[in-house]
Length: 259
Image (cartoon, rainbow, N blue to C red; front, top):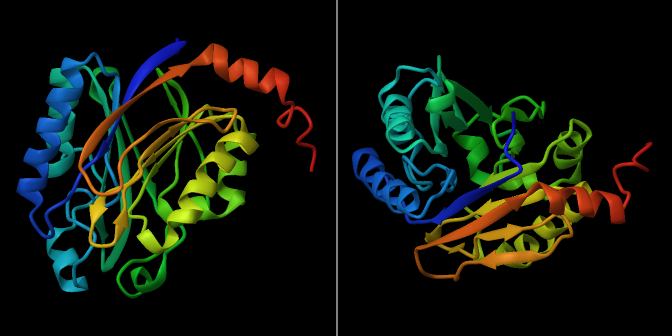
């Protein structure tokens, strides 16, 4: 049975490049704070565990397989179990001689673990990582159907629309989104929410040319919460199934989506 409402924490925080253990500690403190505020789900930015800016050799050293018992996944499974919260966290994945930008959905109290590989790579990412499959499927969770898109994935309407066709209630977008592209961030995320009649959580980092501005957007395309550009900040959103149904009733995009 899914929840009609829940509280989500969007963690706009800085990662220390190449310092996985330090980044885990930072995440653990964020989870502790979010749990103290009655949060059900916490989301971190893209490549939180490694940092975004590193050479390929460094990513190979930091990367882990996307498996249940790898050190980082076990770390967050334990955090999830202790707090009762679900966690979305991104890390570099190693599979054979390939690297991927990976995100995990971890809900240990429900025994749920899911993975999503970034499908659209931006710029120099192509020199380091391989793209994941262009296959977009939501996770069926206690919070409803949740889809994950990573940063550049969100700049195309098709992935979000594919998720919408599969009944997605919330799209989570962990990102390292640049200041030069901030206008696109401010336009595209609300558009994805409105066009696809779902909540959107855009979770960005700061520093190193990232534009911050983490935001929580409702199915009408209204930005309900927005973080600053330069500072670490935790913002909290409230998911309300009644608002979701109201948007879909008043603006029948999904009903008329016959093309």
